[in-house]
Length: 350
Ligand SMILES: [Fe+2]
Image (cartoon, rainbow, N blue to C red; front, side):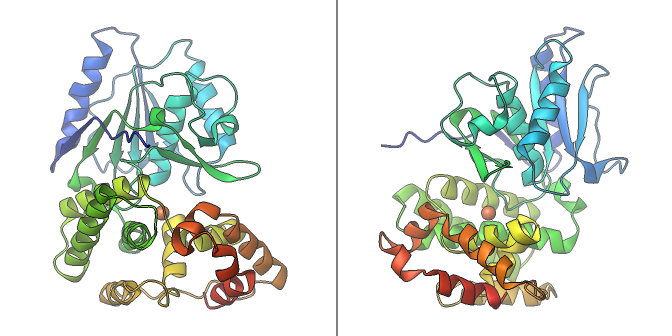
């Protein structure tokens, strides 16, 4: 039986970022050498889009490069940088999208566990309690703020550190931060959550809790994107979707998107949209998804233009490595149903 861990505390509300100072001060306990590590998406560097009055001079601010999704080598490099201080920080804070939050989660774990991060890619491999950590999403949809996964690309595999130790102790959901995101990025990321819900609901790894969370999240997303945009509601929908998928599983779309991302280097949310757009035969809500894209004037480009037969082969193989999601979607006999030829046919349309 699964013992499901959830985020312990969260603030929800416009302006709630202002609570971060009090949280960090509480951890510092008035000690002048007590420092926090604050990982901020490099997108915010020099832009002054939110107040940083929570920082003290001794804090270590890292503007994380999220051009590519985080690599294990990058996590090791950042962890070493923190260790140069000679003592542990009182907190690790992540402010940004899914990649930034995953970087913060991974650093908090790696500061107290020996060896390289590649050693912890997998399930429940982390032994020592991590440094206290706070997640502040600036984009909604990845669910990273509420899951126990820190997705990392290692030398051999793209696989998360999946551990109870990688769950945030505290989350701050401040809708004012979402105003900073460019529209197309905003939609691609939100649709990641839409797809998590659809995959989770139509798979067989489910329980009453995950179904309730995913159904409500999906309903809210439809209201938000076909009706009136509401950033706070979107943050909540993303959180519910994150909790749902964390305890169920993705399905057909995520494996295909991994294939696309590995060969073409596409960002997660975008490759999810490209893949989901071609999955009408499996997912009824692809229709709704297309309506949303139309409403927001988003035309997905063809990404397979110029892709060689050899690259297509690599994509299909990367897709078919995802045994858990595919058996979640198709059952034990998935290999006979979702064949390499079928995968290649789908990919060719993208
Ligand atoms: Fe996803």
